[in-house]
Image 1: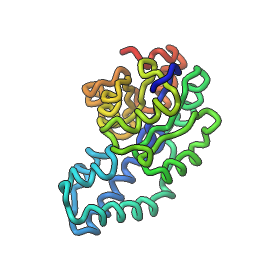
Image 2: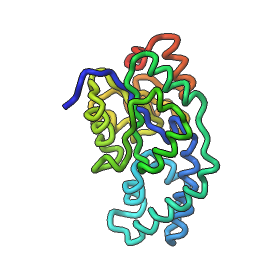
Image 3: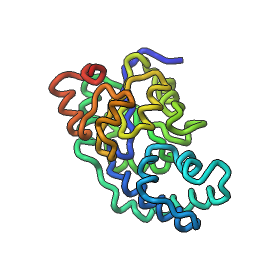
Length: 224
């Protein structure tokens, strides 16, 4: 049952942390290790999906290499962790939303262990209500489960809640959850594509979105 708190559900990869191209590289290496190489541009188009859906979409639902690819991806991404950096304005955005009395939740398709590491890197727990991950959901983005869990767990009002993300998969998950969607281009998806997917606002990155809120108020996230 939903509550009455206005909320903002923040995607993490490509929205707050600069990991999308690291994920592409890790998946590319994983597919090659399994003997099923995939062009990087096809992988990038699917970053933001849950990993289970990404593999099934590229190899087929019953591909015998699926488990091997997923395990290899986890290893390859672990090796790339030293390259992970915050995106411009990531911490500022969380603080700005908190100061404007929004319940801020990290809502990611990443595994819980990765989300925990991202939280340590972000160092914004004083301004967060909490986080959800793929471990909390029966199905990953673009299914709405991760957002719906956050809405229920933190007593959010769907009519006063928006999701912020960088991919079409975030946009589709938000639409299925019945909440608004705000896009950022920092994950590599063009503004036009995010707008076509239903974004009411698109900013270059978290820093640009934070400035918009500071200039126009938090209600600017719900108006075109």
